[in-house]
Length: 243
Image (spheres, rainbow, N blue to C red):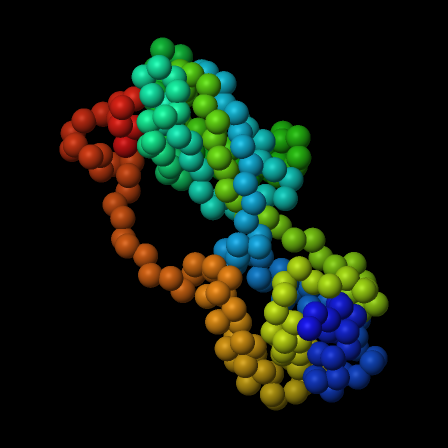
């Protein structure tokens, strides 16, 4: 059963012994709970895809989308020698910092298949981008047109006046939202149960995250930095093998 934002706020406020007089604070608490979910969890419901066409001889910058929170991955199919995309090989770009990007050797005479990218979320980049979300760069510049597939996590806006809103929150686990919001409220009302309520909310959340694809608890293989360890040690990246 999906509750509206106002129902969740009232329910959580009563659990926290705040009654109807503190539902506005419960609304703020619920928005904080929702914000935490999109900021720190890689939930598939918050993952979208954008195609970015890159023209030859360009490092960028390319505007990030307006709802951008962080990049999940960035890739493109490696073209064949004739320029087609039937090579069945995919090139994933390794993320680097802007400082690392700035230190890369750049020359108009040098081009290759891009194998690195850097996001610029500085104040200047936010102002320079058309969407106010920042920019990203690729390295090295490509000699031909390619189409990047950018998978990224999106920001979620706060619910306006949640204590009276009939909006159903984007996060589907209603029981978790109630308990997590109540735990936030208990810290305001001085209810000593807040730690137990918070732990209970986390226990509710864990199996949901596993089912919905959050990868934070997953096991990963440790990988060497692809920028420094090529398939043949000592060889420079080539068009046949960028990494």
